[in-house]
Length: 272
Image (cartoon, rainbow, N blue to C red; front, side):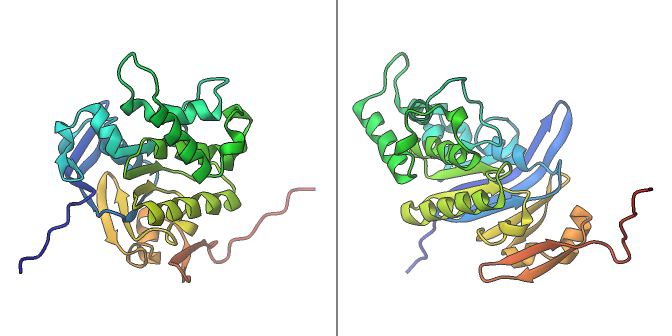
């Protein structure tokens, strides 16, 4: 019997992106299997956000991107939006917009031009609000919510798209550690319950390794390392590419990264 080939959720080959004439990504290869969680890490300026924006169709580049086996270049914008949903670092929220109206924007790929939302669209929004325990906030202005609550609303809009691939650009960057854990646990639960594929970028290495199935380390627009979190989050790699002094501790769900001060560092007392 011949082996059954599995179509990748995301497949990127030799991706090159320039912005303002400056090279941002230079020959990046990336494959994400259906249902997998892959986290992209790297120092500032490595190209992490640009990679997600290219996959989401927000920037163009040279190379190939396939989504669920279809070349992205052949997809209409609406069809692409039904496959891939993006949560950016700082989503733009119109002033005064209520939670339910913001989440309803996720149904845009299904609403005909100059048309209105259908009963099916409204039902999809209600289901997502219930799933993320947001029904009680439906009529609240988004600006009045806490950071963790807003992040759940941003996820709700993405889920309302009905896409199977979630692109999360620094989903916990503005949250305290408690809300970081809350959001990441929620994403992981949704992934397992609904077969979602997650491609995320994260700065916080202290918890990134606990959630990803695989990690990709970008540096200077190239893939410097890829593999299981224990293969990527090593003291040697983090010292080389982040210029950081850390200790990597093996935790129950993955490696934990702990920053450490240089030996002999002392805090000088303020002059009296």
